[in-house]
Image (cartoon, rainbow, N blue to C red; front, side, top):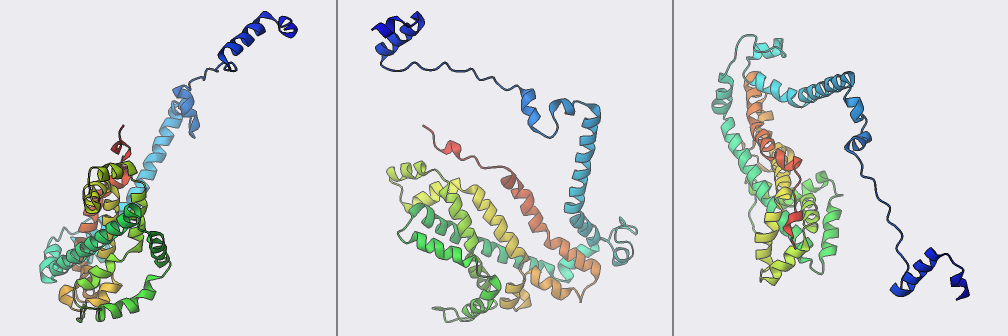
Length: 331
């Protein structure tokens, strides 16, 4: 008691509050100064004050314009030149390849490539090959990713490890055993050579797509799965009604990868599709190069690029726009 009376009145009041409340007083909170918008802009290479200067503002605009022009020339230049050469006579393409229609436009190249050279048949064959490969890869990737990520069987980790090991095996090493399997498939007793199944079935065995889809399914909110199971949803209903609608971004990415890979694949279709009537454009066009004129060949190449360009225009927003899944769980 003697020590307490010798303390200043302010300290005695604080000690009295501590004794009554049973704890130490909270330290005073220091007010955090809010950062002004001008200070937030200081983090970049050019500050807000530098950007307001006329010389800096115009110089940055010039640099941005030059970079945009370089990107357009590098990215769209080959496609634009191919489109121009497809309707240009052979003489003009050989003499002045960079000139813009010095002797007019020859639209007959497109009709000749489509009908006379029968690019229409190979174009339809390519669509069939790409569509079947896409369907096989989507089915295998989504079901395998769903089983490994959502169902999680007891042997799931071992199976996932085996799938990962196949990524380290070069695809060239698998050509011979895969060809022998297609030549004499087990349980069928009939060769799949010169059928689209010889391209579709091997395309479905893509370990990269399985890993990609599985990693995406791992990030989906588990609360939605538990709520669906509580409401009585089975594994198939959970997969079809819950997982797939939430997986549109990864399905779009896998779809573009699958179609582009099937559209430009050359070696494997050349081995298993020997009949010219069912060969895709990637196999048939190199064969026709020596038998047709250059302008018709370039027109055929331009026709073959229509589907990949259309896919890019359709799915470009899917790559640039992130999918917001945070609002899937509320409350």
